[in-house]
Length: 345
Image 1 (spheres, rainbow, N blue to C red):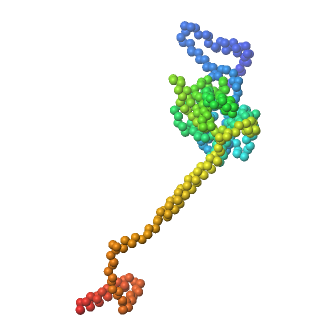
Image 2 (tube, rainbow, N blue to C red):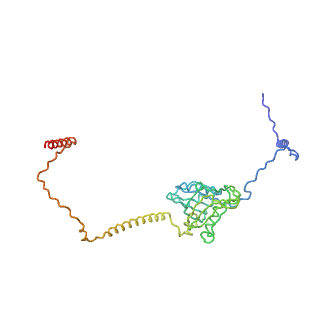
Image 3 (cartoon, rainbow, N blue to C red):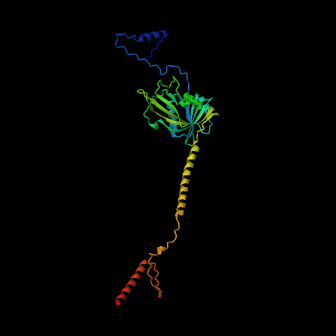
């Protein structure tokens, strides 16, 4: 049986068929009409103008705590991007090219040295400025187990210590922190909520970073994490180099700190040894020779003088016997002879 051929239909007839197939508008009194569903509008309806992008990555040789801290910063900053680890042999100027390829104009770079020292670079690529910090007292989100919690991708408030407005190098760092850590408004990955605060406090010539959640009921703060301390080393005019704008006079390198600790331990040990030697000398000097007392002999009683006995007969030589059993037999025989002589007498 031959298949029937389809008739081709023109575009005008197609539109007419679709109009017939479409249901008519439901009347207000009709209860059987289906409910209408509307698609909600996107989260950010405004225009994304401030297109700040931050590249967060590290060098090779970092430990697990640094890796977790880097991952925490990526989750807290929705405008961040990731990249593979950089080889330690490469120069730092290469990071400017990496940022250009990733379309990023800010960078947070973690540099590890000696598998125990961690340095953080904050840079405005490619013109600059850039700042180098020593990172201390790192505690990550998983390690702290804080009770606070915030919405992922929400925009944070930035709180700064009053010292940031008084000194010029802190004012420069404040502007750098604002451009890096603040989430741009209407960012596609951000949420239109403000429920946590980044605080930057200056204490003991160091910058202390903390993250707090804002509780809606009483506007109190609960710490979320992570937390770390930044010890400023230098501020450079260019990106990852260039002329030095500021150098921290209070900075002490980790190598120098460890050297001073070793010297203090060695000084304590030397002091203990010196104290022991002084005590020995004192003990030797304390032994004073006392003169003989003539009255000590008064109460001494002379011992009885015993007559001197001179042995005229040569003592019998004992037989040398290696075997102990034979020696015992010989001793028994001698004892029996003595008993016999005594009995006969």
